[in-house]
Image (cartoon, rainbow, N blue to C red; front, side):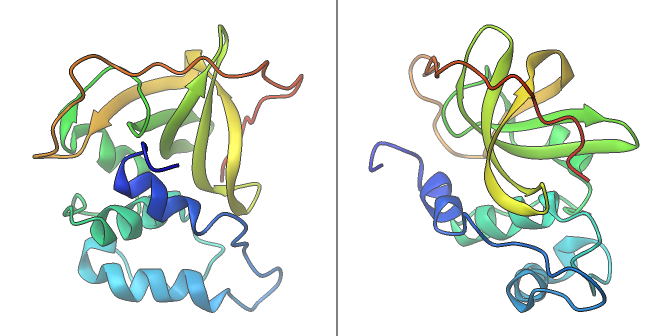
Length: 166
């Protein structure tokens, strides 16, 4: 979709990347950590470590933005950039049991946001997350916000919403 922000286009190119079950790790995920470098905030050595923040950092860096310090922590993104209304391409931060989750807004309906992110069922994919879990919505620093929020109303959310993106 050419009307999407560059970072969403970059992220979409990785849909389908999955963790490797067991003691091995997906070399692509480990390569993202290498490319993000110190901004990852930890020595990232295994794809069993939550990697939603790592993926957002890798994509945003590839699109020309500097990730926050300790970018692997989803809540580190809650103060990054500038606040905005949820809209196409916004970085969304959700609370979850034991932590948080970071991903990008694609669309919404009355009860949920459709999001693109990583470590969602151990892969990069599109899923639905309940609106009542939203903690923050952010726009990249220095990027121009659209003149009015683009709020795409998506299809009906599935009967089951994502509840744990760890």
